[in-house]
Length: 476
Image (cartoon, rainbow, N blue to C red; front, top):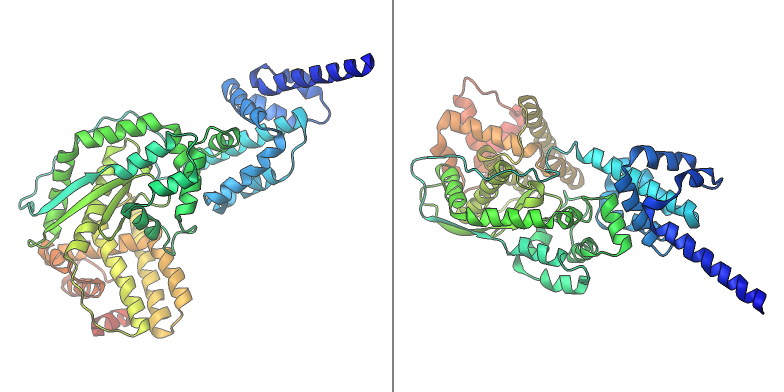
């Protein structure tokens, strides 16, 4: 009997010592670990050579907080939840998490290595992202001076901070459930967000369920959620980023609120000259955080996704102008109600998207391109529209036309800059008033006026084929 009691005692003592070592990442005896035959020397040495002491202790402590190393197999599902699995360069590492790690210290080292290595690859890739600002830089707010005659006082703007504050409040509540989040997202704004981010050029259509689950896990302080936040700091629809920088995002919103009127005046001044003098509207510009686009507009909502900009106020102002101009386009739009055949309507809708995004990009491009990048985007956009013309009018192939359209419009694609080049040509040859007068109409009129400008021009070259030009001029 005493013998059995002693066995149990020593077993419990072993478990206690093991768990202590397991939970204190900066107290592990790495020399002894490296001598273990079942532990990868490559993984141990990489952790020691490529990860700082503090970071290594942090990730080991998170992994040791899991019930067992095998729980990390769940991590793969997170990449599928937020759409990160679409990134080819990290797929092999996601697959590695599917493989059951060993138990005990060997599993701890294995999962810590995979986590730290994949984080490093994700951060390296993120550094190449020209659209997303990766960190706050302590920038101060300075409003550019802009004075244009004839600023339209009939255009009224206001800011809506509620969507961004809703996100911050959710992420500040670690034990919030997805059901509670869904109730918070049941608003007009978020319904339009889901609608916009479900268009065909988004690789993973956004749903309220997906957003709620991503927010729940980004808000959570559970070990498995902390591990994913460490591995993929821009994951869960970018909400890991927001969670990691909550005080900075709150400060950013405070700065925008305190400079609200000056910013609104700047926006009105920037867009007035390229709208009809009779333009009258009242719109709210909303702030939110979400992945997939740095700004967007849908019906009566114009939104700027501040996670893409952090405290880069120059970029924020530019997007505010761009998206507010979309609201102005919507406010002055006139419905033509001219019946067209299915294939003609398909092409007309594409022309309209190019018109709307192109004119807004002419005023305020969503991203700045080098002259070479701009020229490439313009030429690529012209080539895509010619291909869409072939797939709609010459020989109808809706599936191919949709694929081509997605390439042209998705992610601020070449259609934005092709339309901007067309706008620039119209203004240069026919004047700002001519472009402003087109805004209530549609893409067909925009293209026809562009060809009119080309006919007058000795400087600008026609970007389209004679066949396409003849067809556009014949359309009603």
